[in-house]
Length: 346
Image (cartoon, rainbow, N blue to C red; front, top):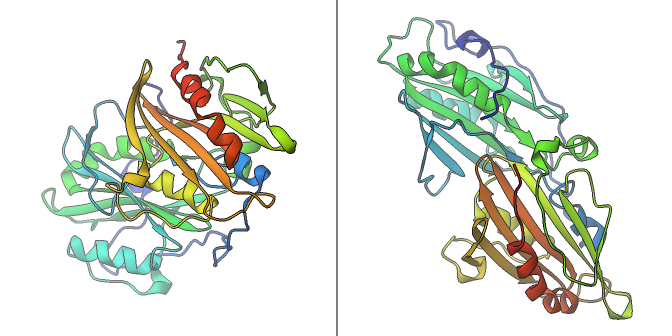
């Protein structure tokens, strides 16, 4: 697997719960309020997930065992040396930095701290202007068998991501460098900076066979493949293939993100039949979804999306066709064949 530069040892997580519990504040410049999404058009839907949304991904060490994430987590992993890492996200500021840190502090027997005393060590996310804050919720004199938490909190414009490593202090110290490497692997594929940068060539190795009538299009630097479909009366549809490093979130999270672009209500459960269904392809298991706006939101017409999610080692591949509903629906069969044609050369 690809290796990333390690952070410094546990001392890098400079927020320690020392005896006076005094910590210093670093703030990330972010808009406080989420913007209300405008009605989507072809350009805005084509941009997703490269620009219109912030798709967060990460690189999972090979010896971490993926576990059932649970209701409020996006992903969960058991480490071979012990301890558990969970990844979760909440809308907006997630209730506030202090509230979340104090909840964790209570879990490991530490006293709460005031808002003004809360912050951590900043870690800049590569290929992005965003900054994660790192926290060490252990005491300097903690016994090896005491419970502790190492965490990274990534505040974004409309949501906050939480990367939490919990276990005994002895386990945290033993695996802190691995957890630091994991945090350094976090990428935001939808950030404007990463979208405008050249994607690493290793992320773009896919071969696909487009059907007749699909025209190669320029797309963006984050696309491994991009096509345009011309329909009657000047209608168009866009086809994209986008690789995102790591897990990239749950199917429910991604489908609800796409539904929001079509001004559809989010689904409450992964058991909802409207989510889509699993299918097999030569390259692996797919999760396939199709959704249509209930209102005419695209140049006076309804819009639709056909999507397929393919998870491969270290990478999640998103295939998507977007555009005027009638044109998209007429091309769903070709889109299915297109997705199944994908191969991934070494």
